[in-house]
Image (cartoon, rainbow, N blue to C red; front, side, top):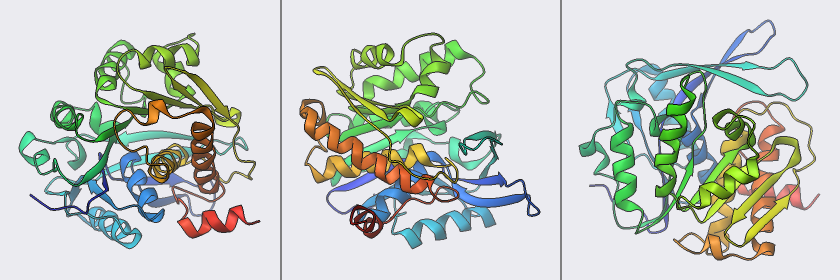
Amino acid sequence: MADVTDGTIAVLGEALIDVVETGDDDPRLARPGGSPYNVAIGLARLERPVSFVGRLSHDPLGTILRRHAERSGVDLSLSVDAHETTTVALVELAAESDGSARYRFGVDGTADFRWTDAELAAVPTHGLAALHFGSLASWLPPGDDAVLRRVAALREQVLVSYDPNVRPHLQPNRTAARARIERALPLAHVVKTSDEDIAWLYPDADADEIARSWLELGPELVVVTRGGEGSVAHTADGEVRRPILPIEVADTVGAGDAFMSGLLDALCDRDLVRPGAAGAAGDDVLGAVLVHAALVAGITCSRAGANPPRRSELAAHRST
C-alpha cells in the first residue's frame, strides 16, 4: 500500500482526453480532462497535497494524462496501471456567447470504469484529509459498486466530498440515474452539484428544495452552482448565496471542477476539512468559501479548456 503525505486529498475517478470541436480551421483539439482528474489538477495548482486515484492506461493518451498530472504536482502513487484504452470525450462548444459545452463519451471497455475492490484497497485509511469522488466512475458499471464500497469504508475517518456530474448521454434512464445518485449521497459530507444536474434529475422541481432534501440523506453541506446566478450553500441551519465573479468567458469547460477544487481549498484554509465541520460553519465563513470557489472557477472560464489557476494567479487577481 502506497504512503501518502499527511493532509493529502485523494481524488477518485476518471481521467480522459477531451477532444474539443473548435469551430475553426483546426477543428479538433485534444486536452486532458475528466471531472475528478480536473479536480486533482486544480488542487495541486492551489498547492494542496493531492493524490489522484485513477486507472491510467499505458496507451499514448494515458501517457499524456500522466505527464500533465505530474507537471501540475499531482501524486499518482495511488493510481492503477491499466491495460485498457483511455476514455475519450467529444466536447462541443455551444455557438452562443456563453461558452457552454456538451459532452459525448466513448466508454465501452475503457480503463476508467473497471475498478475492483482489490485495486481500491490501496486507498489508505491513514494520512488522508479528504476523499473526493463522483462523476462517471461513481455510476458507470462494472466498477461503480466497488467505488461506493471503498468510499463507504472511509467515510467515518475522512471528509468525503461528492459531485455527481450528471451526463444524460450516458444516463438515459432518468429514474435509474436518480436512484444511483441518491445511493451515493449518504456517503458524502460535502456535495457540489449544478442547477442543470438537478433540473435533469428532477424535472420541474425547485433546485433549492432538492438541495434541502439531499441534506436529509446524510450530507452536511450541499452547494449548488447556478451559472450566471452564482452559487448557494445549503446546511441544516439555512442557506448562503454569493454571485459569480464578473469575467469574460472563453468557455465553461472544467468550470464546475475548478469550483470544486476551490471549494475544497477554501475549506482547507479554514480548517473545515473534517466530518461535521463544514456543516457547522457560519454564514460569513460559507460565503467566503463560495467567493473563493467562484474566483477559481471564474479564472478557469476566462481561458480555453480545463486550465485551472495556480495559487499565485489568485493572489495576482485579488491585487488588481
